[in-house]
Amino acid sequence: MSRIGKMPIHLPSGVEVSVSDDNVLSVKGPKGQLSQQINPIINVVVEDGVVRMERPSDSKEHKALHGLYRALAANMVKGVSEGFKTVQEVIGVGYKVQANGNVLEMELGYSHKIYLELAPEIHVETVTEKGKNPIITMTCCDKQILGQAAAKIRSLRKPEPYKGKGIRFQGEEIRRKAGKAAAK
Image (cartoon, rainbow, N blue to C red; front, top):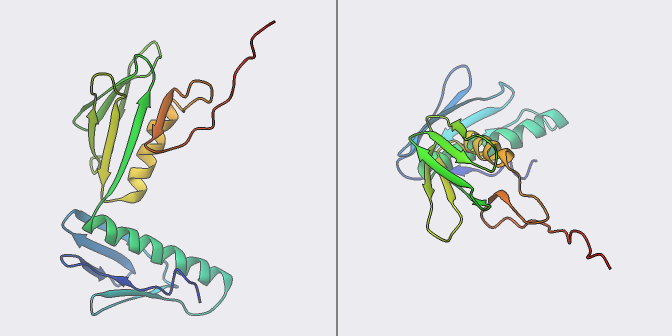
């Protein structure tokens, strides 16, 4: 049996899970509400505050879907109860970031400002302290939407290996290169 798929998902207090007739899993909690279409091959069982996924056979396809949908359901439960958070640092002289509602206004060394509109589910905050790098903090109950937005922001100015300038996740290690050797 799949190690991921066979693990039960324990529901924290305040989280409600329901499965419709057409196999749509709906999770509702204090941070929001999420739903996911589950493949009809996988059977979702909700009982006594525990969600379990069951598959009909040990075929390769069934095993893959078993683990996938269990992981998606676990992320949904965690998202509506605790939420997800990403923190990114903007490193570079003159690089600025400002959040206006769900629109990020960024100056990243290009000849123009970049305006990025985020999904309405994402709550974004920017912190710019004097002498420190600007920080972008995003929170959301949907892990997939949050990850896509964070990857899009990072792609606007990826960290370069020589000076380390760019947008990186907090705590991310960038492999640095030595650069040119001095001429003799």
